[in-house]
Length: 183
Image (cartoon, rainbow, N blue to C red; front, top):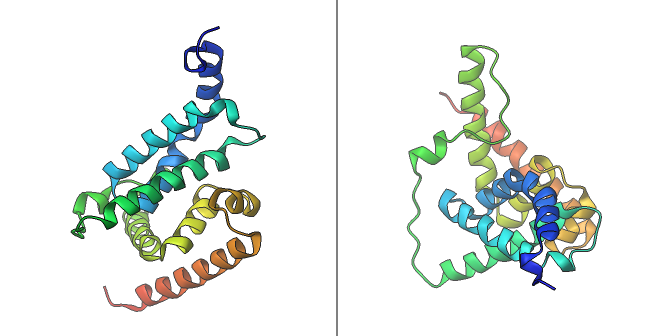
């Protein structure tokens, strides 16, 4: 009997279940780590761990399971970062990066407005404290149910609901303040 990692059927099942979610996993990693290269590394580590433990996966939906693994990887990265000095940079290329969820543009004017709004929204989301940002991204960008978010982050359902309500309120207040500033 070949080792589990050499089983072609297992590999095929993993690819079919996990690879369609790659953009969603990367999006969450990008919001959690706030760095494209770190996010790519975290996603790669997440998928390696998921593949290694794929035989232990039991459930109808793999998305919350992958997000839970990614969260553990990102938390390990936070711990690693805490042991070294961190320089905070606001890189122009990060601000100009096209979000994965962006729709096609209807006109040049709409493209300018949508780009400005997308950049502003991305910055507002990134400014949220980690538990609120995480819950918001899992719900609003990755469309996870409240129950799936609770399972992925290891928090009670009520805590998830509270975090989402607070994140939405904080974003609404920040957006309103942003709109009131002269351009």
